[in-house]
Length: 158
Image (cartoon, rainbow, N blue to C red; front, top):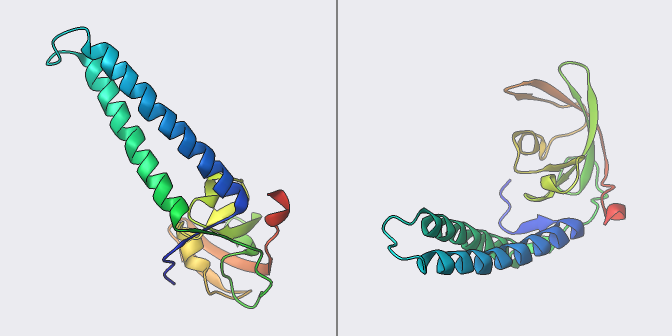
């Protein structure tokens, strides 16, 4: 399954907007540091200048990435359909060692927002999209069985 836009929860969208503002502030701050270091003289051997310029370049790249992610985003909602796994479902997994965990299958950046949110872009997320209850998938770390598919329960957190 190929996902062309950028689905995410409202909570993740808010987190990315905060990160965007922080990255913009870092671009300005690194520019100031570069200017201060440049005023010290010879730029050929000015490590502080080089470091500030590198930090500014990284912050600019982060701004571009975040703007693109947010521009292509749409808000995910709980998926009520439970016959197969797709974005917005909560899935109970059983791992090869017998451990069990419930995860909401969500967007690319959602995994960094909440511990029980799994990005569809992870190996496990990719392996289970479109699968049914009772199916097993093979990962490098071992087999994972799909015990239960439910509507997602992530919206109440946002």
